[in-house]
Each structure stands twice: as structure tokens, then as C-alpha cells.
Image (cartoon, rainbow, N blue to C red; front, side):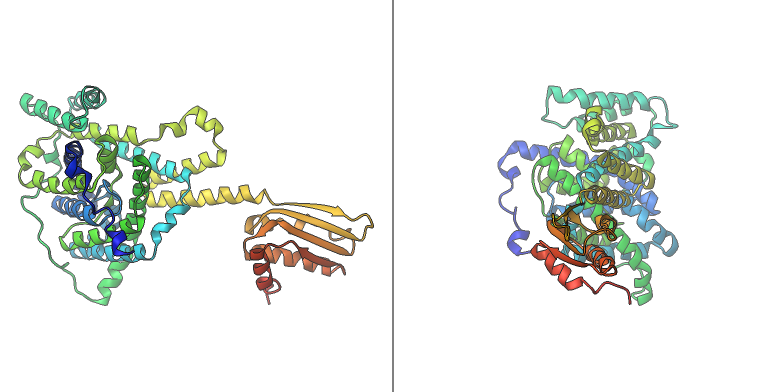
Length: 496
């Protein structure tokens, strides 16, 4: 990528000239920062590290990706998917190895980004994307369920009040984000009335100082590298998958395009920085991104930067106040995000009646895999494979063979139409009448296209069967790419 392309968008940002945009970005960043705190602490627990590690990671990831990422307004921080990948490494080898894995994962992401891994996103079909979005909404809601079970009864009216405020407050004004209003009002009510409900402080202690850079406490040996590399590579893949899918989602919501290659490299840089500051690494966060983009209306890098900056300010300067925020307020925000994220149109009866069954099945497969594994990468991969199978079956049926015998009875012409590839060519051999056909057979492929070696092998098999009966075969009508492939591979595919 050229320097000019990398720095594109460095022109005067809109928030410098428009106070309304500035207010939206600042308030959006503040709401996201508040929502990040309990999430980061929870992911730290999953990874088996101190809560400060997750908070530091969220701070450094957000600030760094705001500067080097490819998708403005997208939030990157410590995530559950990354925590699940690196938790076994921390448990078996210690925190130093976890930090080393985060740094190496960043290196892998930069390499993969430079190699163009982002281009693979074009092969993710819409049905998988819809399944991705719906499964994210379900996971966001499921993550709130523990905060709504075995809790004091006041939690439930507080959640209901928070949801009501977020639904009705925007009808009065959109100057201040409704989630921020909900969090502030519910905090004031619980503190003033002395209502005993779970709070942010119950999740863990907030850090009291900024992170300090340093090297991971591991021996710099080949043995360390071989121990860390598999976890780092898995983290790199999961992080890129989630980040690129989230970036594509934000592109659709904002009707803008972003550089997926820059985002891939930026995720790597952010993880390297995070590792050197002792963080647990991360990637794009769908829930917080939806708060920032869809709920708060933020559109620029400023909101992402401020989300990280406010996070540290809230922890270090306003720690006691933030600790008093009731979890019910944040649960209400995330439930609203879940509802707003889900693509309700995709499950409407009218849509399901019109949508091809295969598309619906692929969407459901993606959702089931993600929800069952809590791993977005697995769901997207399985969903994409399912989509390829559905597509292959659909296209394979388009290949047809029709026969016309000349009036003199000495020649039969088989006209083949459609796409010839492994799925359709397997049935090609059985479409010919080898025993009853005349001595001369013409196979007209002017309405077909040869895509792979399987098709060439199938045509070779047809010719062989006719040759065994003393009959000649002439293949005509090949377009240039098909003729080139047929000439190169014909006669070379039989086993020796």
C-alpha cells in the first residue's frame, strides 16, 4: 500500500469544523468506555489474568487502532474470543508466554495483512454475513444472562427502566446519547437510595496507574517460539476474522468503504503495542462497535481514540465513581444493542417464504455454529463451506446434455450446456449412449465452460469409452480458456 493510500483520510477531520460531530464523537467514546470496563474485566477472568491486564489491553488497542486502523469508528479492545484462545497458554506456561503470544500474533497479522488475506472477505456470502450478525446479537444477549440470574430483585426494574429510557429518550432529544443518560440516572438512583445491587466494582479492582512498556518475561529461545507460535497464529486468525467481518458490517451500516488491508495490518500493530504494554491482546468488538456506530451515531476515528482514553481516565481518576455504576445499567445497554444488531427482517415469515431454502439453511448453520462454539471464526468458516456446497449443488444441476442424430444416422451430436466442474462433471460420463450411438460422435461445448481438471478427466473418460467400442469422438466449440485447459490436461490425468 502506498503512503498516500495509507494516509488517505488524514485531511481535516469533520469533527474539527462541526461542533455537532465533535459532540457525537466525544459522547459516543464516553459511552463505549463505560461499557468496556465490565467487559474487559470479564474477559480478563476468562483468560486467567488480573483485571488490569484486560483494561490495559482495551486502552492500548483502542488508542492504537484509532491511528493505524482501516475502519473509522470501529472499536477494538480485549475480546472473549481472544481470551479463549490464549487462556490455556497462560494456564500452562504463565503470563509472560501470554504476552509473547500477543506480540507474535500481531506480527502474524501484519504478515497476513500484507499478503492480502483481507481479499478473502469477498468469498463470504451474504447468508453467512446475516448469520454472523444474528449470532453476534444472540451472543451479546447471552453474555448478559449471568447478570440477570441469581441477583437481587431491584436489578430487574433497573434493567427495565434503563431499556425504557433508551427507547423513549431519543424522542425528546438526540443531543446526548440515550445509553449515557440511562447509565447516569440509574447510577444516581442506586447510590442515592442505597439500593444494594451488583456494581462494576464487584467485577474487580480498577487500575490506579497507566501501563508501563516492557519486554515479556520469557526466555528468548526456539523452545519458547515453538510453544507460543500455535497460540499466536490461532489468535491472529480469530482476531482478523472477527475484525474484518465487523468492519464489513460497519461499512454496510455507514454506507462507506474501508481499507480491509489497512485494518488487518493495523490490528497487528495494535496487538504488538498492547503486548509490549502487558495487555492480553484483542480485536474488533461487535457490541461496543454497535454502541458507537448504531446507537451513538459516531463515524470517525476520534470516538475510537476517546473510548480508549476515557477508559483509562475513568479507571484512574474516577475509579470510585465508576465502581458504583450498577451492572443493571450496562446490561440494559447491551440488551438494547443486541436487539438493534439482530437482523429481524431475515427471519420475517415473508422473507423466509421468498428466500431460497439453501440461503436460509446457510444462515442457520452459521448461527448454530457460532452460538454452540462461542467462536465467530468457526461459525463463519463452517457457514462459508455450507454456502459453497449449496452453490455447487445448485450450479451442478445447470449442466445438461442433449443429443441430436444426423438424418443419415452416421453422426450424433451431443450439446453440453452449463458449467463443468467437479460437482457437475461427475455425472457427465453417464449422459452418453456408448453402445447404441453411431461410429462418429461430436461433443459440442460451445455453451459450456471447463473449470477444473475433473471436467477434463470426465471428457477423457467419455472418449476412452467410445474408443473401446471403435468409435471416434470430436470435441468442438471450446472457448479459449476451456480449450487451453483441455489441451494442457487431456491425456495426462489417468493413473499410471
